[in-house]
Image 1: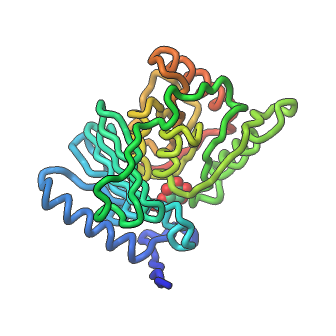
Image 2: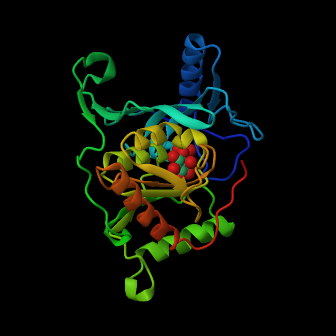
Length: 288
Ligand code: LIP
């Protein structure tokens, strides 16, 4: 059995903010490879990020070498390498690969998004992977109201204070019976990887994903894959439908495509998003 060397992240937030030697080595390899190929582009990675570093409008690789580190430490196979590319703080290219399931999700702005499944030999040895355009169900299933939804929600690593209160009370509101003022959603799931949660929403297997506290590197790649599958990313706090959020906003709500036609899709999504916002208790705030 491979022994994972757990390291202490600096600055170290708390006992659930985990990092391993693998996270750091994979990022070093990705950054070296990308820099050699694209020396003029900037790089923002989870393991080399320092407080105060800001994502600019410059073309930038936004990378999470091991998204789902807690899963990786526990050998729970919901882990991914997430490589995004942003321009003007907007995601334009994304690749998310889960080495345990050999599933790769790709998305390029204006060119669609795909699920590519490799057989046992993995990426290097499989020349004919199965490739499917997202969402997997076309036309997308309608989603008439929030009570029909399966929603991904994550605790994250902040476990006290007003952000925690907002998460716990909102989770309660989403699950609670309608006659008691709740949304009575079908159910909630916590998979522990923002990138794979976004890919699940893009594929249509999950209807929504809500989280506050994760970072640009957790969502950049998945965001393009979601948008190119007709899905939408909006403010994780009750917001304004017309106001787009930047990739480093740190409060996110993702929703899958709910109809084939552009107009029907957008109006159907707006209805669900505004319904979801009405069940959020409080406002999440995170330093950037
Ligand atoms: C994780 C995110 C997840 C969040 C975790 C953590 P990491 O990223 O993907 O959504 O809930 O707290 O931030 O640290 O495994 O790269």
